Image (cartoon, rainbow, N blue to C red; front, side, top):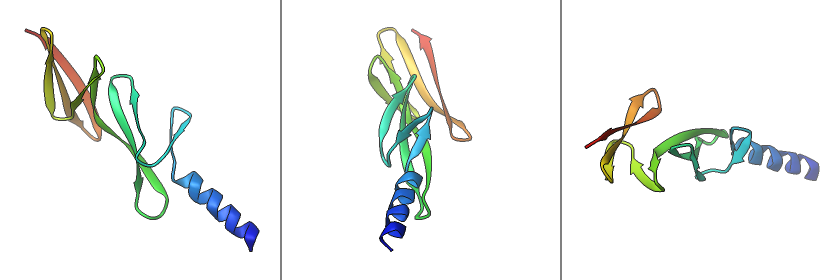
Length: 93
């Protein structure tokens, strides 16, 4: 019985992780990947997970999805591109 519990605990831990680029991430963990702020989220009670993009990163500043920020003479726009993807555009002023 104890061995069964240990196996169950191990499998529960494994299934509650996001594996992104070969690196395990825990539930609610946030990290920067390229120009984007990412987060690992647990989905439901069956052990599923997903990653989501919280925003864009420019010069160590976060720009939320759906908003923009002016840094120097450049305006950066972090926008929802559909299908769960996010893109960052910019233009000079």
